[in-house]
Each structure stands twice: as structure tokens, then as C-alpha cells.
Amino acid sequence: MELFRVSRDVYGREVLQGMSWDLLWVFIGIGCVMIVAHAAYRMLFAPKQR
Amino acid sequence: MAVCVLVLLGTAFLPIVGLQFPWVAVHWMAGVVLAVAVLFHIVSVLARGTWGSMWIGRADLADIVEVAGAALRRTLPTRKPGKYSVAQKLIHHAFTLVVLTTLVTGGFLLLRIDTPWWQRNPYVFGDATWGIVYVLHGIAALMLVTMVMMHVYFALRPEKLKFTRAMILGWITRREFDEHHDKERWQVDR
Image (tube, rainbow over all chains, first blue to last red; front, top):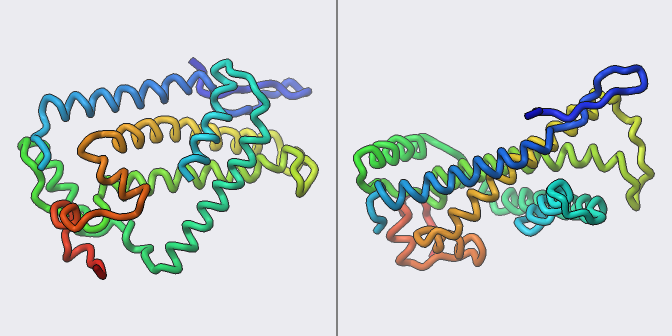
């Protein structure tokens, strides 16, 4: 998986175009993992709130 | 601000996942509205003199130690926060950093499109500089996706619904104040 999008200019030099949009799914995945981990912690381990 | 961020994320990422539509105009207009809203928020906070309520001080550091200890002992923390908990302050600062990054870089990117105020001029910066602007705009937008997911999750948790209501409507009950806030750290008029 690439971190950045790059292209080449008219001289053949690499030009940075921005972040790779493949990373969108990584960041969505991180969000899902954190939500599931927190929900599991609250359900299984955390003391009940007042 | 929340609606603007959702519109901005939708117009940024829906075309990437395959839902094609003319997104650029809606995106930059939502960005301008968000910038105005952030500016209004900053001026409003300065006018009310409540800048310090988001400051992380010694008491907040003690809160972190106590919350971490309580989590390890599987007990409830006994210390109460002032107006905002340290977690709320941290997420506010994270959103501040990420949203300001998108706004500043988005402001530069506005120079690359025609607007009612100017004609596009992509030659203001060189390719390398534009690349850095795009990377910063992109990484901040990607971070916003995760942060918005977490923010919505916590807002919808049953024990946090009172904070969600307070965030939307701007008030809490006396009982909620007594149960969840330290009146020494948050001195209210009524």
C-alpha cells in the first residue's frame, strides 16, 4: 500500500500529489477497532457508572 | 461546525469510494462556512473570556493519573472535573489542530479554483509546495474520519447522552452538575 500519490512532471521528475486514498480504509479501520475495543472494555471490565 | 465537517468529509471521500458527483463547489463553500464558524467561535470565546476553560492544568494532570489508576484497579474515579473533563479537552485540542490544518491548507487550495472573488492561479506555489499542501490537507482529512467516528460513538453511548444534550442545547441540570462536576473547579452563577 502506498502512503503518497505521486506523478511525473514534463521533465520526468517525481511530483508529490497528496496522500494515497487507499489510506481511507486504514483510518476507517482504526476507528472501528477503537470503537469495538472501547465497547468491549466497557462491557467486560469497566465498573458500572453511577 | 459539525454539519460543515460532515458535508466536507462526504464531498471529499464519497467520490473516492465511487459515488461520483460534482463535489468541488459544495466542498469549498462548506469549507468557507466552516472557516467563518470557527472564526465566530474564537471571537465568541474571547468576548466571553472563557479561553481558559479548555486549558489543561495541574488538576487535569492529576485527573489523568487518577483515571488511569482507577481503570487499573477497576474502580470509579473519585475526582470530578470542572466544566470539561480532560478527555473532552484533549479531543477539543485534537479537533482544533486537525480542523485548522484543513482550513489553512484548504484556503491555499482555493487559489487553484475559480471563485466569485478570484480566477484560479495554480502558479502561486511550485509543484513541491503544492504537494506538501495536498499531503497536509489529506492527512488531516483522513484523521478527521477516525476522530468523527470516535466522536459520534462517544456521543451516542448511553452514559454520555447527557453530554451530547449539553453540547447541542447548552445546558445541564443541577443534579447533573452536582454528580459530575466539581463546583470548586467550575464556578457557575446559577
